[in-house]
Image (cartoon, rainbow, N blue to C red; front, side, top):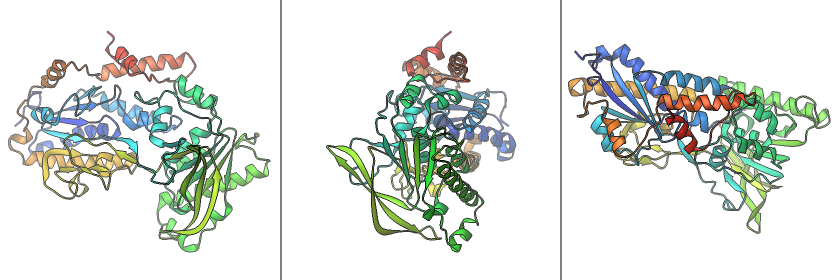
Length: 486
């Protein structure tokens, strides 16, 4: 029987990444351990050390989702409550592969779980993609979300802009490019540099291009509803995109989320008609000074340039069957634009010492079960190493998928630990202070949960000065000073 009050005797788990995937997995591990631990013979006690390369936690919730999402606050609050757990120890500002190695962790932890996120865009792979004025969504998102190592300024001189993509990130990017700066500042935590940048944005016409049809889009209903309420923005759609055949309507009706999305898109079509009939107004009936075109069945084929800069985008009309298969028509249209943003997917981060599946863009794991393997295509399972979230499945799925992943991976981890000798206590170094000594020897000063709370308190106090709930700190050195202040 394991002594539940002996910290050296409890299971020790390292989690890499303090975004939703890492935090949810930590919480679910502890819950499942309390529920199943005795039956599995591994006890019910564990210490989880959560390592994050950034000075602050929450990953994509803080740095990958548009600041005007109303659900952000609730998700962040839930994640914070999980971190405020004596069995979870936060180590921010500690980078795996640089500050700590896999050998360091395997010496001190019985299992290592990778919950790393995405760091860069999938390439556009169109002629003209290298022109000045073509931007990946990831870098733009980093700018408007105040990523610690992101850009501090952004070129927003284009009056006509194209956004390529049929998912939520494309919607976020398009919405921020159409945003009124004062409205955004009043309801979000954007820092001053982002406010000033959006205030000076010259974009007056935006074209969102989605390759497939209305029934195949990947937008969430929430994203669509946020698009509907943009002050000063007129929505414009192509009526032809909404002429769906009976087979397509029947297929869309089989899935609840798809059906809801299509219904919301039809509501947007009616809204767009009202905006036009009202004399080119926004959703409140006020004169609109920006136009937001939504193009379905539109596949960009080339970015056209002049003197090395974007001058237009060439788009081919497509047709999409009820089965979701897209066909090209050979009908092309050129749209004058001076900037092109592509949101066609992210590439999750690699991890030093771990095989990477380039084809599916995730860490190599056995049949998608989260157990890390030696090779992308098969190979042997590596003991004590696991992946969850985007690190496991690639850049698809929302919070619900992340929670499902976490439960499956935790179940596999506990099953493996139960088969190990000594009740899963595998790591030779059982001293819970060992990792702190190691980091101190290397001159690494982690930011713990208390340090994060000091940063958060400062952000709230700065926001309160302007009548806002929160205002982000973006300088990593300032974050460190705040976190380590006595």
